Image (cartoon, rainbow, N blue to C red; front, side, top):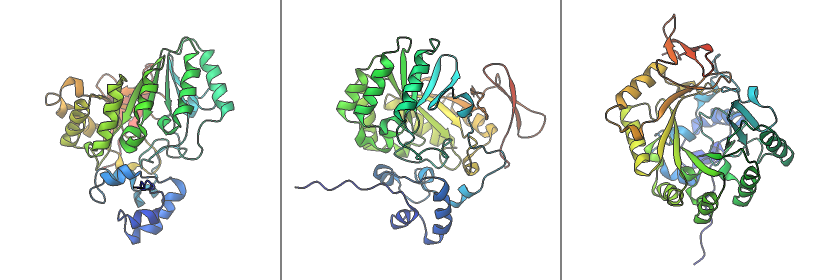
Length: 351
């Protein structure tokens, strides 16, 4: 029997209409959204959507709310460009750096903090990659490189293996992290040969999987994660706190317990960044803190991530605890202390 060709990803508003994910009346606004922010929903995530507007659909199906940009929202909300010594590299902390190995993703999240740039180009050009690797080699205080973009697991396995081999030639790099959504949103990419290739790397590869709701963890996604864990690759997770998606105690309990059952350590719960057109996803810091307090006790410490804020402007990530985030002089205003002791104002969104 001839195998059926794989279903295409949904990338245009009219395709979303044919799939029953949006209404015809939505198309004019969604066409405007698509002019600024790319759309891509894999077959795996289309299959995970149980109803329009549910917790999976809300992450990937565009809405007219994205046309509203609030004054505090920033084109580069976490300050990648402020810490870019060479193209394709962000060196924000002393011992680790981000290598933006590609701008391509298998899905385009509606809340992405790099939504202005993802999808605009493919892999990092060879000249930029060579320059980034030369900077890494010339900076011995670096010990950890984070491959992101974009999603590094959208690269052809051979291309990814070549990049990892070039990093292995730099003696002071002891750890490589891959930040990815692929095991969840395109689990068919996680083949046994890919898992074994990643396991064989030196320096050791860690994978940080992005997932925000237990509904995303379909049987194929669970099998893909198992292939990676069974190959001996350490897995962590990162999630984003999203209004209307996972901003309840039960949703977070279900997600973090499911990840622990899958042998994935919940690592970070990110406060939603100030990317343009994302205010409808953003909770208050106070709400996030209350949620985290409600998880202590019911949830094992091994399944409890750190709730963190990437301080706007590129000042780094801090845990949202009393040591780093304190109430300011007005309702909704917070004073945030970064890892170097500098203090910044942060304002919660209006209710």
